[in-house]
Length: 177
Image 1 (spheres, rainbow, N blue to C red):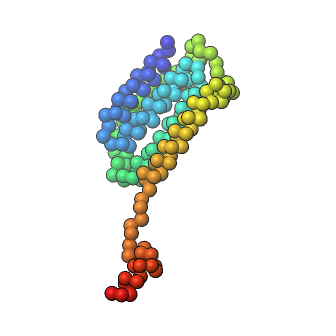
Image 2 (cartoon, helix red, strand yellow):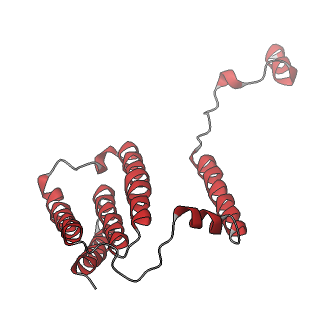
Image 3 (cartoon, rainbow, N blue to C red):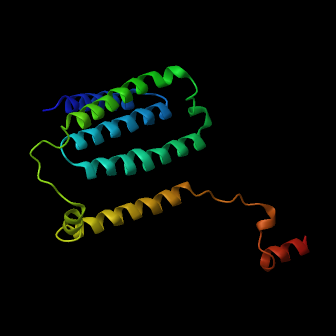
């Protein structure tokens, strides 16, 4: 095994523990992004560059940034990233990950494990071939989660006096009084 594999694995474990132990949600997400990047380095080291790029772009890039924006919008007090002491741990771990990737790229050790190469086309054929039912069930699960999140997050309008229906019995009662 390669040194980069072990370093990235250790960083992934440490940052995942930091995610669990942080009280501030922004700090936990910062460590979670580092954990996902460490997993991407592991994928790169074992010879799956496509999965590594997807890990960085989809999870660490898009979804985690969306989580950070949501948390910062919902609780502005949680966005205390201005203190330099918050950035020391993630900065050190990021430098270690970067050094490991540079070491692997310069040394030509990326993808030297005995893992069969899989192309994106083969993944697509597998997902929409024998695993079509699983993909459709996952999409229904995601859709139901989206609908549930919409209904849970929706706010009811407060009822005011002007919302009373005009006409009918209520109008007749007002005229009689």
